[in-house]
Length: 238
Ligand code: FES
Picture 1 (cartoon, rainbow, N blue to C red):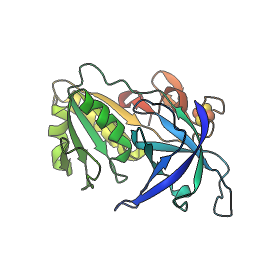
Picture 2 (tube, rainbow, N blue to C red):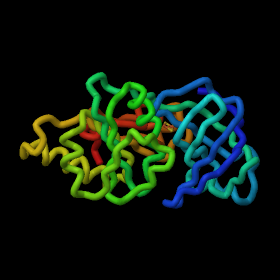
Picture 3 (tube, helix red, strand yellow):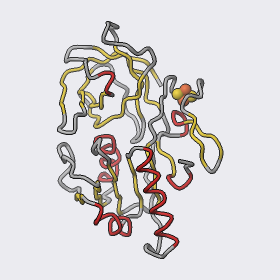
Picture 4 (cartoon, rainbow, N blue to C red):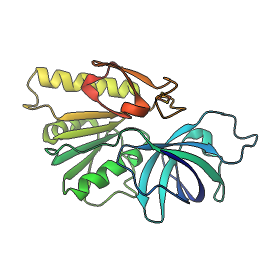
């Protein structure tokens, strides 16, 4: 992990109210899907009413810059403002070898935080379906990704998938976990796909020092900043 200053060059307000910021600067040479950055505004003013670093998840990364999702506390920032960033943090995801059919499950926040996984899966020529209970904008996503919206599609999508990556609120993750367990128990799917959930607790230090991001799993306490932020969904105590 390293600390650096990046400048916001462009903001993109999405239809769902989330804001993506394209940033440039002395960015790290690369990072893995699933990693994140911790941010503070470089210049503090009366709008900056928080003092702890906030996690920022990447939407995309390229040679000229990266695009990150701004958390609500930072959406007052404008192009030209600078962010003090630390990262990349977290354990990068390695797509399982057997994952040829990848199902991304997005909640109301949309698929932006899952895009690095989609990019990594596409680079491996995997097939990708994006599922959401409600319609989502597909802006920025590869046209190779199929979209399925509405609860009627979930069962078929899970049955098709080798691996699932879900970015949902905690209660929706809990519902999905129950649905997977019930479906496996009643034979709805012959094989249960691997399923991973993105957890987003407060992560002020990012290095396993403050324990603010502790998550309870069937293997005991884990830290979202060091062991996550993606966890095996079926291991989580939600
Ligand atoms: S953010 Fe401090 S231990 Fe995880």
